[in-house]
Amino acid sequence: MADLQHDLVIIGAGPGGYVAAIRAGQLGLNVCVIEKDAALGGTCLQRGCIPTKALLHTADLLQHAREGAKVGVVCGEVTLDLKAAHDHKRRVVTKSSKGVEFLFRKNKVTWLQGTGRVLKPGLVEVTKADGAKVTVECKHLILATGSRCGELPHIVPDGERILNSDHILELAEVPPRLAVLGAGAVGMEFASIFARFGSQVTVIELLDRVLPIEDADVSAEVAKSFRKQGIALHTGTRVEEVKVDGQVVRCRGVNGKGEAVEVEADRLLVAVGRVAVFKGIGLESTRVQIERGRIVVDEYCRTHESGIYAIGDLIGTPWLAHVASMEGVIAVEHIAGLTPRPIDLRRIPSCTYCNPEVGSIGLTAEQAKEKGYDVKVGTFPFSAIAKSSILGESVGFVKIVADSKYDEILGVHIVGPHATELLAEAEAALAGELTVEELIHTIHAHPTLHEAIHEAAEAVHGAAIHI
Image 1 (cartoon, rainbow, N blue to C red):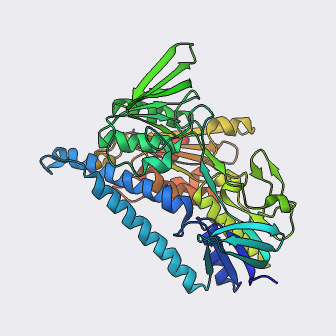
Image 2 (image 1 turned 30 degrees about the horizontal axis):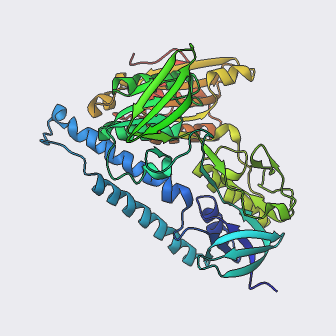
Image 3 (image 1 turned 90 degrees about the vertical axis):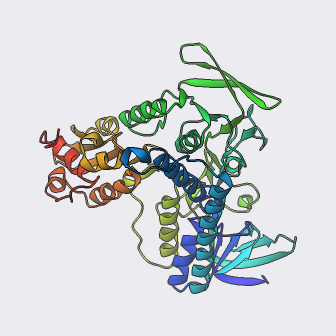
């Protein structure tokens, strides 16, 4: 007989697990969440999305204060108080985590701190921090254990000179020179933070451009802006050796032309992706299948084991917090006997919060052509938008990809001021399967940054007004 019995057990309380738990409580399920950390929220809240964006906000304010004299705000000497920045970051994290705790209580969600392991389908063992063990019987189980920082065999973070994204969030001082290995969202965001904090930053990327999953024009615009900010970029470069020599990290590699590339830094950030957390959760006692490092699920997040679901960074969908949250809702609603709508993988928003920001959804022009669409594209620069001039942020553009035959909007790609917020309009447009003409006939308030979206839509039809 198990120590506890519940309708649903969820292992992991990140943005997938905790959202699933709250939705389950709303639907009247008796739910228990098992979380190894002492606070709720998972990597996203405790060590990822939220603390990183708090530091990015500090970097933004620092930059605005330094440039304030251009618009008549003279601040005198502007300096960074890194301790205060960390204090702000921790307050934000604590407030959000406590908010999840409150929602658990409100929705009668039981929370057990400890590590969960599946003994067999329907039975989970929890090992608490003090070593005590309890067993929990359940009708359904959702696996939401997330992911950890990835490593390379020849470059192992030590937490001192070679860092991962967890380590760098707690640096007590700004390194004079920072090398960043990996130009995905994580690497580019930390490069943007520390360049404005005062580090001399060098980014090294194996592929031929930064932010390689984004539209090529977007990547080029970000690279141009980074270089203008004094950030060195080495794309198409393979790092073959990293040595720590006292307080110096020496990186040696070769670029696509066969030329040697050598970078010296005080710290090296390894931002080469993440790895799903499977070890120790007991999958060997189930029929759950893993292919290429991902748990195999159907459109409702069901695994091959009856009653067991998997969500978030454990499965093959994009590893994004908002995707994990939606998957948690879909899984729970399916468990509750409802008919949830599966995720449309063509319409998942992607955001990078560096400076300039990047927000995108849907297909790039190249992807649309590969799928057989007759593509038309409209692009409009923020430099022609009055609100951008007011803000002093004129870098970037809005690019809309559409289908010539039916005028349907297939993708929207934004680089520039507040791109991650502006993307919401594009998300709604794609969800509603809007045409470019419908977007053109939507009146956009003036003066706003959103006008760039309107003008880009007009540009698809060759009728942009302000350029």
